Amino acid sequence: MKIAILGAGFGGMAAAYDLARASHEVTLYEAADFVGGLASGFKEPGWDWSVEKFYHHWFASDRHMLGLIEELGLQEEVLFPRPYTVLLHKDRWYPFDSIPRALAFPGLGWGVNKVRFGLVGLYLRLTNNWRALEKVTADAWMRRWAGPKVYQKMWEPLLIGKFGPYYKDVNMAWMWARLKARTTRLGTYQGGFQAFADQFAEILRGMGVTILLQTPVTRLERDPERGAIHLETAAGPATCDRALVTLSPEVTARLVPSLPDDYLRGLRNLKSMGAVVMILSLKHQLSEQGYYWFNLPKDAGYPCLALVEHTNYVSPEHFGGDHIVYMGDYLDPGHEYFRLGQEELLEKFQPVLKRFNPLFEPGWVKKTWLFRTNYAQPVPLLNHSQNIPPIQTPVEGLYFASMSQVYPWDRGTNFAVEIGRRAARLMLEH
Image 1 (tube, one colour):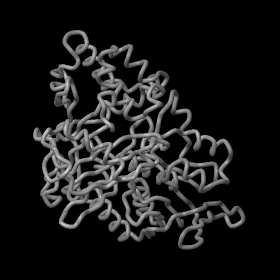
Image 2 (cartoon, helix red, strand yellow):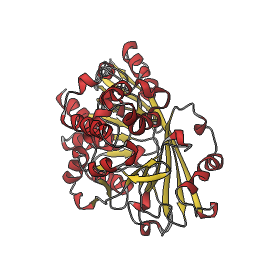
Image 3 (cartoon, one colour):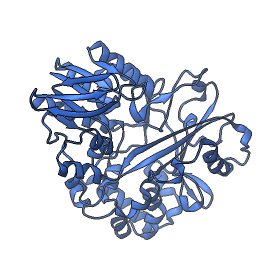
Image 4 (cartoon, one colour):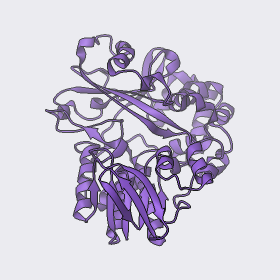
């Protein structure tokens, strides 16, 4: 078969890998001039590693991604440094990335709150009955079982930061999956995620896959007379026997207007949050304690969800001695952060850096980069499993695989690989 795949993120590339191994003719269409999607990176002169535009890492439990890397023979390039995640209590940061450290965290007090925290965490780790949990919101479930104090200190700031105005509507299965799948060990790739994406792309090209960069597809329709799918692309018209779209639900709805109304309505009803990330290159280390990930409570006056000092995770030597700091947030695409210019946004973010290091001065900032996307974090509402569009669409030969369908799991490269390969299996079966 001739197969077209729209989107050269890790989901699209993983699907291309399996389809090419089955001896099909695969073409990847990518609007950007690089592969890797939201996990792509950039490199400045003097850097020997790339920096991801939107901060990424792998968990030790990410079997789909790590398994694919092993299949490709690249497992020796995967690194698992030991970073430190911290939580705020009374203007002081405390490590909070293991059970012993969590139990020692003073923000939960002593006695019954810590017992409830431990029991809730244990239950969520052991249970697999997530379908029962999607019938209740995380807000209601956590208030009842973890208790108001533990919930307000631990989980409510996370939900507010991730989902903004929808935080009380998110179901508990999402929280279960987040706690179930994550580990304290965090992995990356030698040279950065872009190095892996580029190597993966070269392997695909060696298998005969055609990768067309800067070639967006503007329309996709099935031609019933010819029994083929017609594509309008920036390089001209093309046809294929099967097509897989790995783009956002909103973009997919625009590309394929011939989809039945109920399927289109389902795509358009899927809610999601956008992401805004500012990356700063600093002359000096910001966290002298070597902390990597700061969970920021917005009610404490922080302008974003997280501050991540990347070079407390991997050495600044890879970036010419620069210290790399992310400041990022999940936001509704209508938020002002999507309209402000880079300098305007820096004015909002920069003043709080003194709260991490009193010695910080604006002169520490060597350079900044700003990245934004309208589609970053799907919002899973009650009984969300009933709202997920099937991978095989009602249009014959057309398939759709996105981060909105990896539920109950959270978005990320691991589950992008999983759903990309699942879509490829369906295409081969049919």
